[in-house]
Image (cartoon, rainbow, N blue to C red; front, side):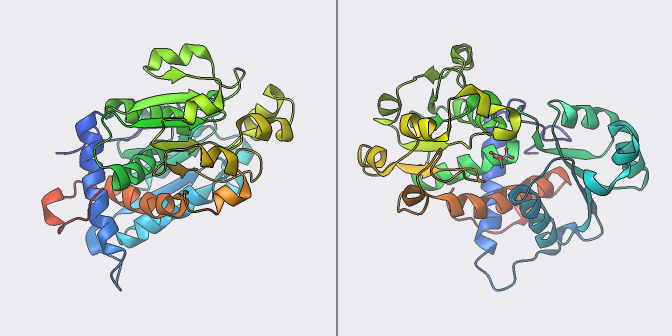
Length: 316
Ligand code: ASP
């Protein structure tokens, strides 16, 4: 059994062997993408509800595609047109959904801990698709998969995460996952966005961008989370770009094989220059493709899929 619990709520609660097991299955699904028929009948007759209480483009579409490729029945549910508008609580909504006999709930919500809460009150499996600034485990897994495809074993590899760490669930999931796999993680950004206390998570905090990226194998560039109040913690977009933006000049100073991730959506010319976002070092579309594979793997494993029943894998 690769996953020990019925839910995937964060990378804090997954062990290194669970992470590696999921990525192995994800790489087998990834291999299917190049075939003319990409759907597999594994989840036929099972129902997955996508419950998105906060805006999402990439993650929602990616989950939906993953579910469709596994042939699951899907119900999409967003807060905007639901009974939340009439004051129904999260618990009541979730219990009503569960009473309709669903097999899995994918939830995005602005409150940290909401996915854990739903996992406690529901019998079905819950996958956290992002809970406030807490965790975004499928993003963490797809980032790690993308890094491993290029680097193999991450032990001793240097990953620098740059940006709005304080508001970032992507950063937190990356930190948990990467440190469990033995990578050396450095965090960089303005002090108002990178609290020094994060060093307790076993990472290095470095406020000087040039020093933070000098010997990095990977840069993971985060979005400035304007909707979570990040705009108040730095003087302006231009100032941020000048101090912490990943520009061509910064890229010239990187190790020749270093590469750049961004979880999207990008604020072009704020955290990342347009030329870098379109340039040869970025692996953003690999991340997106791996995201579908990672989500297929989690859904498959949580619904009791047999890892041995899938064919051979590519690496990653
Ligand atoms: N799409 C990612 C998330 O939902 C990253 C971001 O929004 O900045 O957290």
